[in-house]
Image (tube, rainbow, N blue to C red; front, side, top):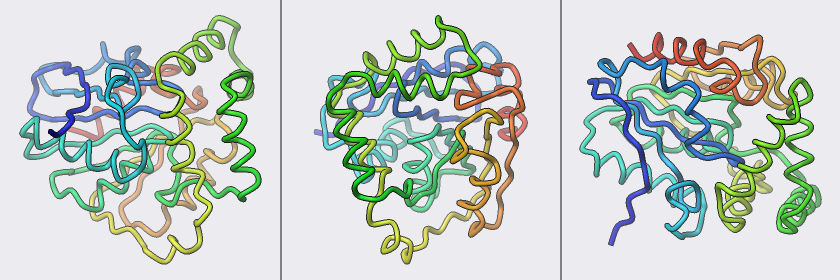
Length: 254
């Protein structure tokens, strides 16, 4: 039987928004901003991918094709005739692939995104990173530390704790493998067609690979693209600037 991903619905408005999370968090990443969405205007569906959050018990391959199909099936299950997709970091890759095939998607909003081709990484670097993640000790702390230089210990502990506990190790490693794409060049010949508006949020204090200047390069092949840089955010605009984040999403969705 078809597995339906776990989701929480907030609001009862006519504008449907589906939210997808990143590698080291789950749909709870959006909690801080949800109070600022107009529940009369929007129906927000906070979704957990397989192996994450409330979908932890839904096992699978944790790859691009499966995640893409899971979201498309969820949209059908929810009987949505149209929707806007909001995706964060790792899931922006998945979101772009959905956008190229699902005609019900009206707009795609990408938070601190990567290319639909994944992240360029040589084989040795990729294998090194994956083996460190498999050890399940130390690497997450290092990533959180690097991405949270401006913030205090409570924040760092929260992020580390969430990264370890909100997902299955196998799921984290497989999704990481998905975007550390070694076959970047050959896939590059199969251009993705996205014919809906692409809206993007970057954080000024994020890693350089997620900087506005780098991100704009990943999306130059598409014609309807708008990028807004959040001055006070790093990799988590929805948590770092929740009111501004909700306001920006709302202005794009109305």
